[in-house]
Every structure is written in C-alpha cells, then in structure tokens.
Length: 145
Image (tube, rainbow, N blue to C red):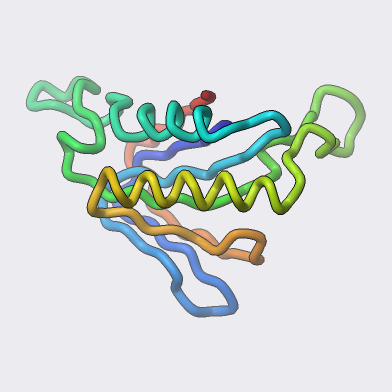
C-alpha cells in the first residue's frame, strides 16, 4: 500500500456536489492499494500515518506527528497511485489491486484508523471525487508499507 500525504490547513472531499468528508488541520492521505497488499500492509501504513513527524514543534522543526498536533486524517482512495509510469505516455494499472480487493483493504484501513484516532474522515471508494485542500508548507510525502 502507498499513500501520498499532504500536511493541510484544511481538506475536504465531495461526491456529486455533496461533501462526504472534511478535516481542519491535519493530513490528507491519497491511498493506493496494489496487488499482494494485505491487512498487515494497511496496519503498517496506518502506523506511519499516525506517527510520521511532519508537523512543526515550537522551534519550527518537523518533530511532531499527527497525534501530537491533534490533527485530522482524511483518507481518500486513489487507485492511480498504483500506476506504472516508467514506459510510454500512458499509465499502466496492472499493479493495482482488483477493485473488490482494493475496497476491502481501504475499508480495513479506514476501520483501523477510526478505532485508533478520533478525527478520521474519508472519501467514497470508487466514486468520482472532488478533493479540495490548502497544502500547509507545502509539505508532501510518499509513504509505502
């Protein structure tokens, strides 16, 4: 599993013009599920999401994690993160998990996150979503399990 995370001042996701998830300051995580990923990968990724130190301490250094910053976590499924872009001018999605497996593991990640942290929001798996955000920094990292 992989997640492109962005430290945000706020972020939201809408489906068909209706907001389905939003956070104030925290992390927006665009999550891709690949063939062969498992619950263990989801748990490892969640640990990184909650503990990766991307928030500033009193001295302006990135020493605080999501929990220390009391931030929100917005999880949005994005199968295009599994694309292979090394050859040609069109992405290949052969490494992406099949939709049913991707949804199962994304839902597992959301459930585990919600059990571990009180401020979790999400998009809608497989939907055409519009994501809005104010990137704080900008600070963006790719995490992989």
